[in-house]
Picture (tube, helix red, strand yellow):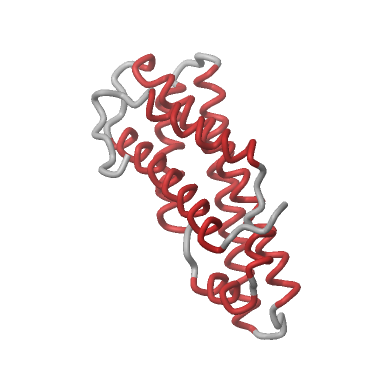
Length: 189
């Protein structure tokens, strides 16, 4: 892969994070006003589940790569660094647990299982809350990465294929193509 400029790398990552935030906000808005009829939001919820499956798989891989790189570069005898890495591992495990519940609910919804909409809304609301409370910028690992990573490290950590980038954008568009009329649209979506 050719070297990305720092600006294009940060722009791409910022775009991915912005779209992820918009989908999370859409999920939060929808689950705050549960559907009256399961069919009303089926396509929207399936699109959200598909988006999170793809986007979070990539982000999870990136976060694991970051953790591996930090463990290799950081002084792991420093208790603050050990704690930062333990917190990263805890966040990643919690994210996977919530994501799996969301994907199971999505699969039940896809199969038209009874009470699948309610299951999805419960799992989705819990997952959106977890993301807000636990994911994103954390000083321990963010400060370590800022101090230890050079441009090549950032490129390696955020490495993603053009096909995966395109797929994420397509899944994002699908979410908002199916946005329910009765749900208040997030301000920046």
